[in-house]
Length: 292
Image 1 (spheres, helix red, strand yellow):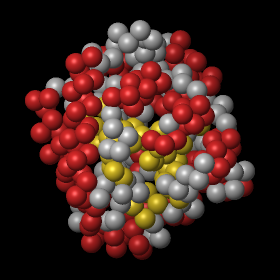
Image 2 (cartoon, one colour):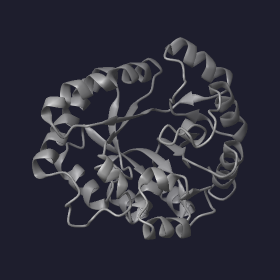
Image 3 (tube, helix red, strand yellow):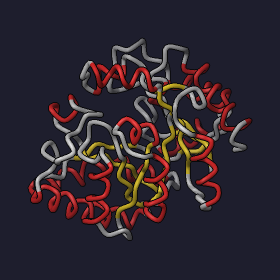
Image 4 (cartoon, one colour):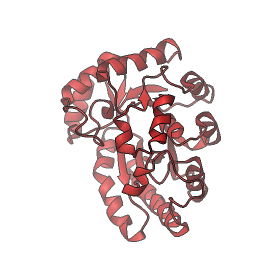
């Protein structure tokens, strides 16, 4: 396992007015100061691979991946959505990265019910939309193959792959040789899924990991007040590793036992502390308690 972090912990593009933007150079410096060995690509990062490689090398960091929203519900959109991910995909390929992360973008209505998705599937994709999305993912995976990139789908609150049932449907309809998973412990818990069970069931699909801890009291209050995803982020539902309700130690132990060899990216999204302080707390927990 390689332990990295993400620029979203410093500058969250979903809630741009959360606090002033932190300069790119400072973000890299603080990532390294906190003890991480890699980062995802983020807003404000150079688009030139040579410049990006030089900057990352100067801070002792590697590039892990990047995240792209895609809308594949309508086959007529597939060409445009595939074209949209190609510039970041080419950059990743030039940097020797092996994974591209996508999320099936939710509508405003779906974002508003994040964490409270009806179990009957009424707020999800129709049968036809699922078929179109699966075909679109297969086409995208085929397009990425010459770049030596594997497509993984992020289980993300507010997206159309949020609940355990939606993860199950995604995996039933897609070719495991083409479409993998980026499982996110915090988003799984936010959706009400059993985190460790989901990792165990879909171990063979696992191509990338995001790890967050969850403040159970804050999450309960968010659900009680029926807050949408963006408003919820301002309440700090995610906390530093080891300070929430999730069994992060057990999850890391499982990843080690199952011989997972990919990136584990620490995310928190928003924090009342400084980003550096939160990053240090989580990295220290992984090192001292989890042994990674």
